[in-house]
Length: 235
Image (cartoon, rainbow, N blue to C red; front, side, top):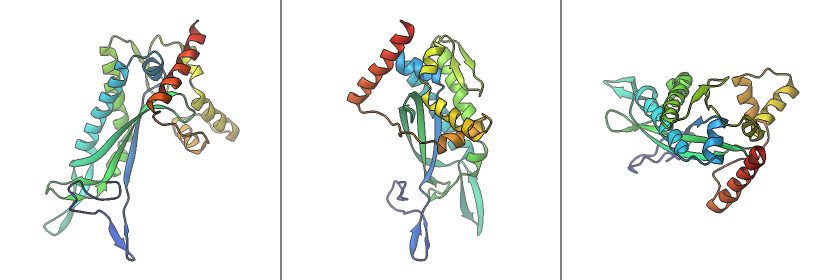
């Protein structure tokens, strides 16, 4: 569907330019749990936190679909912008960063097509999504905070308003923060201040192996390695 074929197989999205079809595949929204939540879920092994993260992502995506997804529709000879509509999206959860460190996050890949009020598929107009990305992130964080507290944990907001779990050993958090250390080093080398914006730019520009969901056998060995590090820190 990222190539433009609609779910019903009746349409191929895109426009013809000089005899070639041009089509923008879609966009990727990323929802990331904090390092303390990732450590508690993936190193301490509380899988309830993974479910809490998944539910928070779905809550945020519901808001995206209802409030910020837009498409252009021709009505009575005029082009109008519709808000809302049915999107085609996939959620891909990963458990490592690029470093790789334990990092619970989900990519929400939205195809460039919306089923509009007339039942036809038209292109996704994503300006409102980008304008409101801070609100979308906060919806995820608020829902994650609520879900984690419902499990009996105490939470607090961090420096960048991320949701942290109180009581997670800070030494563990720092020991599993290689990716963050790479970003800080890149900013220091360039003489740049540490802000969310510069950190994002450094993350995109720094070189590291791409992390992904590990196959079951490799993931088991990797988690064992995480736990060995944790045992060494707490022993």
